[in-house]
Image 1 (cartoon, rainbow, N blue to C red):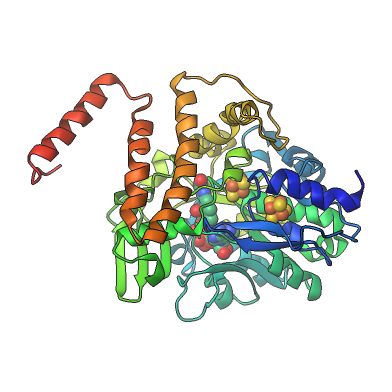
Image 2 (tube, rainbow, N blue to C red):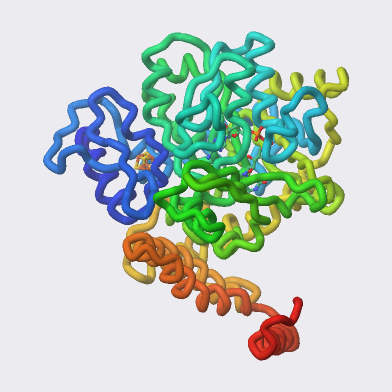
Length: 473
Ligand SMILES: Cc1cc2nc3c(=O)[nH]c(=O)nc-3n(C[C@H](O)[C@H](O)[C@H](O)COP(=O)(O)OP(=O)(O)OC[C@H]3O[C@@H](n4cnc5c(N)ncnc54)[C@H](O)[C@@H]3O)c2cc1C
Ligand code: SF4
Ligand code: SF4
């Protein structure tokens, strides 16, 4: 295949088979034949501008897509950048520092999802003159209401602008406009992103030298998976705000009376605002994976292995009780590690040395789903005759414990059903179309692996509630 056919190959493999995560990288090259569009399910997807297009660029599109057949994998990319200065762990990737803690200065922690390190690292790079701009995600109409949808990658250069980008946006975003802006505007940049987005940046840098020169730091976020825009709509609709009225959302409101993982959701509609504990909302069980991009089930990078530093939540018993949030932080870049160590000495950060095994433990469920069970998902996909992207692990015909195979199949079903049924619910203006379709599969899924007596207890509780509706649970 020639380079000029690579766009067609990317289209026929990654895009046609539903593995596009909508990162936007393939739309960045000048004269790219791709554009990024929002599909009916509320996901960004790449699409050929014209199906008969003949790309006249020097770009190899299969090498720049994180799921492309000829793209380097995370190990290969990271080895080139970090192997001289870091140790390696099979779950976390390379590391030269592993910490848990939070920002002690300013409003970073209060305005962040977790310990506030995401915004702090970006701001510190600006403050110390290591970059001129940061590229991060904030409300498109930032200014007054930081939670207004849609959320979008934007360029910031001051603390005030950077802080408008705090909080995790479980919402579709794409990088093409922001990266084009970097190409058009000289300067030194830091880019924050989910693992696959950072991988795209690294891959793009090998073909676009100007991006290699200007993007000095990649700041990664630990990632469970990405959600479609319908996830936000489904939560808000259950709070009484239908999709056409939804104006803004905050997925991570901290509740001072609860542990950090029991956060609430804030939604704003034309008729008012609501805050509801997230676990009371149907579809918010992160493990079940409603509204997940299919690509995420074929991705094995949890700790943004190609990023200079990665930030997540320290989901560990010793930290989770603190409602205000604690980060797990893995550094790979020596300058960023030093910024953190210096700020800790100055009392601006409260950071414990964590150790790599604890970092692994903090993402136990995510790592099991993404790095262990991926082999079984590849096997199922191949067995159905589908094209599957090259991954670091091969297909696995079995999974332990035995019920985990059923759970994986039900997760895939939940993912698909959530997209399809919510689209129908929107069209029919009836939330129940989504809930009534997905709930029976979710109940079936939740029962997998639970001992018989616990299932019996749940059944009896449900019967009791149905017979005496006022019974308090
Ligand atoms: C889709 C998604 C899935 C995640 N899954 C996990 C997980 O499974 N486990 C875990 O421990 N942590 C996960 N995280 C990370 C976690 O939610 C926090 O973002 C992280 O702990 C940093 O919090 P903070 O308080 O330090 O950062 P903050 O100060 O809140 O800053 C967050 C930074 O991330 C940027 N950002 C927000 N949303 C996005 C986005 N969608 N794409 C790119 N950049 C964005 C913001 O612009 C900001 O710069 C996920 C984040 C996202 C967006
Ligand atoms: S994952 Fe990114 S690079 Fe690959 S096809 Fe989709 S938008 Fe393009
Ligand atoms: S799970 Fe993987 S593919 Fe999905 S958003 Fe996260 S890093 Fe990207």
